[in-house]
Amino acid sequence: MRFTIIPVLLAMLVSTAYAQTPKFGTSRVLFTAQDKIFATPVLYKQSILTASMDGHLYSINKKTGTQNWKFKAAAGIATEPAVSDATVFVGSYDGYYYAVNANNGKPVWKFKTGGERRIGGIGYWGMEPATQYMEDQYDLYLSAPATDPSSVYFGSSDSCVYALNKANGKVRWKYKTNGPVHAGVTCSNNILLAGSWDTYIYALDTRSGKLLWKFKSKDHPQEHVLEGIQAKPVVGDSTVYIGTRDARLYALDLFTGRKKWEYSAKNAWIVGAAAVAGNHVYVGTSDSFVMVDVDAATGKELNRHKGGGYIFGAPAVSGNTLCYGDFTGRLFLVNTNNWQQVDHFDTPGRNQYAATNLDSLGKIRFRHLAAGANPNLYTTSLMAMDKLYQLAPFVTTPVIDGDTIYAAAADGKLYAITFK
Image 1 (cartoon, rainbow, N blue to C red):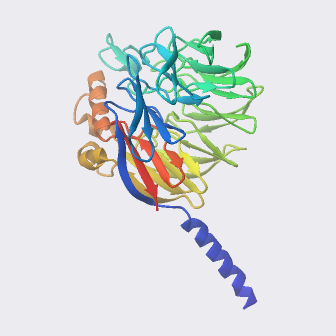
Image 2: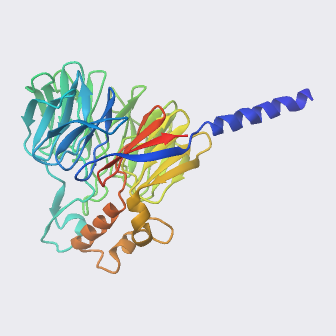
């Protein structure tokens, strides 16, 4: 009997570990903004801060959904808020970055950049008509700020990376890249990391703005589809992990920029930030619809979970629970012990429009969205995007707070979903 009891106990332990991954419980709409939400919400005390393309930054009681206050910019806000010393920092398409009192929503200061805009061009990506200016419909974000004890840092469509005095908004330094900087920035060890649409990742001294190193991702000289950087860098154990539109996840030495490895996502962008947990790096892809688990030391793919749509937000990880959303309006719960899907949550938009806007397998397919229209026309791309927005996609990162997940959908709804 003593030879069978150990395997039985081990089986029980494994079973218990898997069972510890919770499922979704009750869900409710905590708050509804008046326009799309592209910015990941953040927690502050007993509130959750969320920004919307309706031009407002909202402070919402995370239990009741009551609005504590709102701050209005002159155009949409598309940056994840950064909170430091009771101050919230956000950027808007009105060309300003704002500092707002986190307790009452009163403005502290504002700083004017050289202007904020979406990426675009004449005949963008080879679409027709070749003489028309076209915006990149998937350039959803402006640069999310980062802070340290004295400064706030962010990038801008004017191609600069800025360091401002956190207290008064005065410029400490700025660094000019060769392309718009829409990716969020990250501080670590007096190094500021910023990815630019010029295909370079920059490491700058936070004290002086001096360039320490830069690393070039790949470019796509003709159509420019597989190039540019939207993802925020993440640092773990002196390694920078950053995804790019060149369909790669790079691991770089924090202090030298030396490439340690690269992971290829084939022809799929990596738009969202990675999540690092122990020896694992989790990151989502666009057109291949997968959330991958990569070995942090080698870049080898260990596991993957396949959904049905583009993944733009970073995953949220707590214990052996991984949660992420996709462009089909579905939120997934995955057990990272065995990479089995535990549960999912669908937005009302997905429930209403999946039958018409997704293919027979419940997946995004551009030609299905085009419904016979010329796929090379820019107007077809706009029509397809409108159909995707009908699904109320998740393009933000879920926020896990104890037994509750907060998730903002692009239809402007902020959901509070309990675990059970």
